Length: 226
Image (tube, rainbow, N blue to C red; front, top):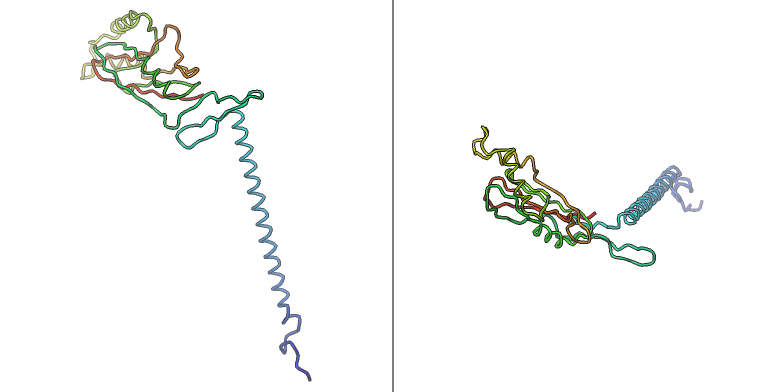
């Protein structure tokens, strides 16, 4: 008898090509791997398409694109066939700014419009909102007439009558009237910004309202694009 090419006791098909059951498992495993890879590629494509669609929608409506965590970078937008600069721009390093004011009397309405306007100009916001805040409990901030200084004096006098300095208050520091006046006036105010400038009415001004001076007060200002 001649020598066979295959080992004794094993059919040629098994020795040469392996166990059919093993080959079946390998084929299924390969198919599953290919299917998983295909599904993953499709999912990635759908996510990319959805992200692009959302970003395009936002960009066309709001005319801005996120630029880091410190602010918004405004993109140019097209009107007709002409590209124009974005309407508003918020600088990357602009946040809350503050300045100090030294009051001269116990009760005093002090015009701070000029200082606030300077912050608005530095913000480089063309269209937006200016927030003015004061972090004191015996001083406030408000907007009222600044053309006639007598208006501020009248406000000081009338609030002094409505909330007198001594009226049997329980507060031990003797300045409860100052706290009450701050509650009435408020600790913050807002004003519009148009064309890069503080947009107040013809007779309006922003006042720091001192109720327990003279002191050094801190006024905080932030400008946000809209």
